Image (tube, rainbow, N blue to C red; front, side, top):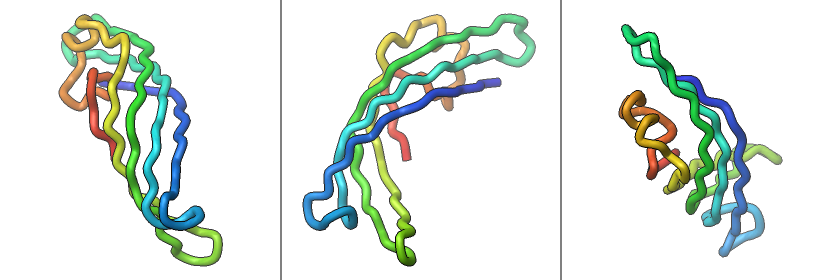
Amino acid sequence: MTFASGFGVKLEFFPFAEQKGLFVGADANLSRTWVRRRGIPLAVRQTGFSTGLVAGVRIPVIAGLYVAPWLSVNYTFGNSSRMRLYSTSASPMRPASIRY
């Protein structure tokens, strides 16, 4: 079982139009993850900081409402080998990740 909580900040730049179309930027996230494997009474809790690059597109739907699919390539600092031992391949605390 994996539980995660946290928050993040994104800085976005729209190179072609004001607040719509293609955007690029950077993000930073602070998250706290708790991992426990089934059948093992041990659990690991870890806090991690990640930062990365973001690219996406902001598409207007109706007046003032937008859809913004994006892709982020991140690196997590302070990821211990103990967390990797207990985490699954879907853990949000991998040292490098691609988010969407």
